[in-house]
Amino acid sequence: MQSIFAFLLLFVSTSTLAQAPWPDAAPEEWGLAIIDVETTGLEPGHHEMIDIGMIYTTLDGDELGRLFLRIHPRHPERAGEVARSINGYSEERWAALDALEAEAAAMRILEFHREHAHARRFILTAYNAPFDRAFVDAFLKRHQSSVRDLYTHFVLDLPSMAFGLGATALANGRTAAYFGIEPETEDPLQHTGLSGAAWNLELYRALRRRSAETTKMD
Image 1: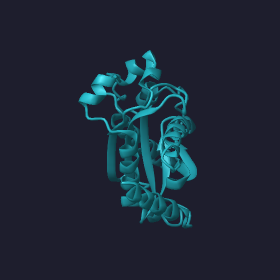
Image 2 (image 1 turned 45 degrees about the horizontal axis):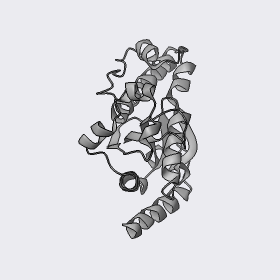
Image 3 (image 1 turned 30 degrees about the horizontal axis):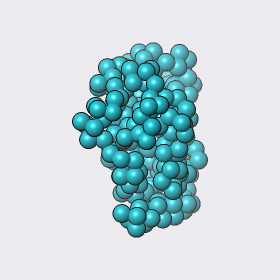
Image 4 (image 1 turned 90 degrees about the horizontal axis):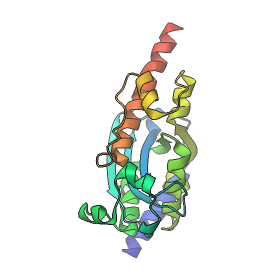
């Protein structure tokens, strides 16, 4: 397993260092890594990522592939009550849902990225992207990798993009209403990284539609 892990790290690290034209010049060489994570709290490095949804798309928002993982934290005792109320985490539930140990989850993430990285460079895209980026980075660094090995240093932060189109509330439910899409579920038993990533993708597509409509009006 260690040799496979080392190969994946080498492939991912070297493949993302290659230079490519900018997205406006070669959009087919770029993509979005639309990500959402659930965690045991708010502090990366102390609290942990316990679930991740990843949807890779073209710049137009056409889906290329998706991955969903639940992950056993090393320190379940650090899980706060607020976090548990949002994502339904408990040690017993995660065991019943076949959550992965952290090393196996890291391998799955790198394998998924490797499937797509030979053709495109990916921009991490999320709702409150600094939060998700920090937790993914902390997780990968515990397994000899990092966010910079997978993604460009640019990020796309969806509420910032929405703010520029007039949705200044920032809260995702009110942002959903502004763009005429359904809000993400608040049911902790249904709310996952994948439900979040899917909602992020729906919002991204709505942002593009609104931007196109605004451009036509101009």
